[in-house]
Image (cartoon, helix red, strand yellow):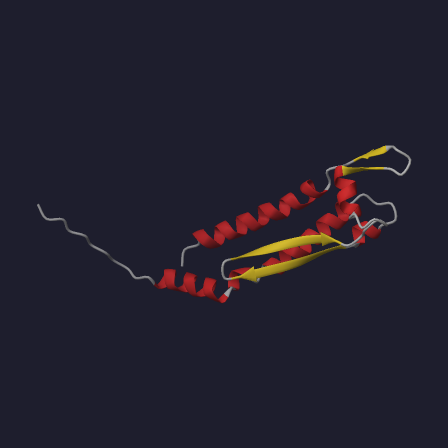
Amino acid sequence: MPIEIAVSGDFSATERFLTAISRGRMFDVLTSYAERGVEALASATPVDSGVTAASWSYEINANPAGAVIAWTNTHLDEAGTPIAIMLQYGHGTGTGGYVQGRDYINPAIQPIFDEIANAVWREVTANG
């Protein structure tokens, strides 16, 4: 009983996809998402003086193996602790008290994560 395999078509779509990946084109859209993340974080940051909200920025590190968007906040207290982290997780006061943290980072950035995941999925599953 012989086994017969029939193949039709070509690998042009696969070759286009692999060429695009090798050139890093899929990372081009990350700047837009990174900037939108900064806007989301700034608008969600609790405001006293506004310095912490205005101190959000981002870095994109991309290489052929992948990419990372790192959102950073440069506003520090006198001891060098990031104010954004103190607001997120809480902190002790100089008089022995405690200020409860408020989860504002995760709800602000989650929609951006979802958009990135959806965009990547659309790109991966796009025909041709």
